[in-house]
Image (cartoon, rainbow, N blue to C red):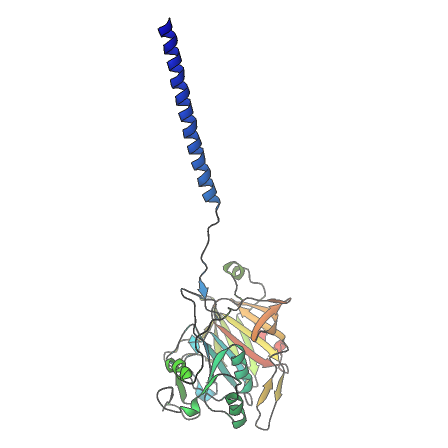
Length: 346
């Protein structure tokens, strides 16, 4: 009988011990599950890529090179030009008469040569300075050159390097003043020799997300035409690439070297006040007051306003900046006397 009682007691002890071990194991297992749950609840950090500030295109490294703005000749005898297909942004503005001049802004790409390069105008170098860009041109009236020498903008004047074959070169297939080209990879080094800082960072412009680009609203814009005097500028939509090709009248804007079309993701047309400033016909142009504008993207035209915010000319709607499609942008500045209402959108 005593032996029986002893066996029962031993069995109970073994059972209790096993139960305690199982409870402890369950506690360890449950704790492990809780740890896993907590880890699963932790937010996953997605590393955002850097973007080029003028195009919004992603890049693996922080871009630290300075904007370089080049004055490009747009006289009929200067076409087709070189380097425009690699410009991130281009401003097209009237110079004298009804001929426009182009200020090509380079940052994400570097062409071999740009040109033909033409002379400076205050509203161009003021814009360049507002964007903290180096301003490259060839020649200037004395009073304009004095403005630059007195600090209006960091600059390189091709007149001092004319056909040195290091920074500027003259080409024989065109006649002056339509034959001066800047050798692009020499610009930064020459600027540093003058004491200019050529490394900096920029806040990017506002760009649309993929979701925002799928829901663009506005009027269909397969062909857009505007006028500078008697000469038209046309943009024709390419549905396969969702970009616009540019034309002067019937002549397509292409690269001189290989006929690469100028393909644009954004066409930004704005009107502002122009005034003839002297007997030569030079102009003063208002880039501070804002006004009416059109933004053309992905086959759609949207009525917006333009504003100068911190020196940058941007599209605005209801007080908010309107995003650009990531890519290249062409900005056409037209007089209020011509007006946005005369721009044809089809």
